[in-house]
Picture 1: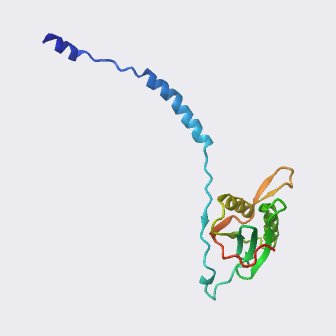
Picture 2: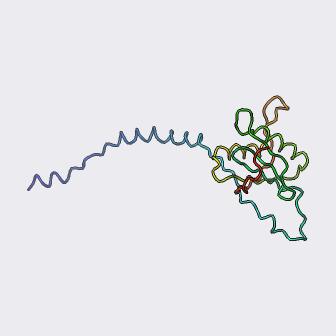
Picture 3: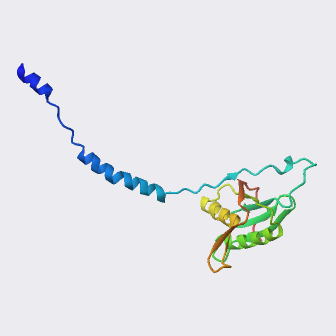
Length: 169
């Protein structure tokens, strides 16, 4: 009986050296990794209904819509209709530079307008949406010798494009 009580009285020591080594390595790594991981969140909304405005309200000078179809862009004003069709470039790719240049000319005519709707066909690839959003949102200028980004139409809404009637011209 005496041997049983002797075994109960002894307290084994916990060896937490390996756990402490893990924490010494893991905590700084996680802290450093958190600094380099930054997510960009872009606020987008659904296009508002153009017919919902009452007759007393003053209509905005431009309600810009950029429609993305499988073979062209269509830039339009919701109130007046199509403004320009931008076809694929010589490499059969979307011409985001031409879209950005045309939107820059529109911005010079309507400097106070900040909203634009991007309307997409049903099976538009996500990559096309992102590049189109970049072309609509910002201008990259080289006036100072260094690339500088300026806002073009930063308030973006996303929706479904109407069926393409005319195609690329």
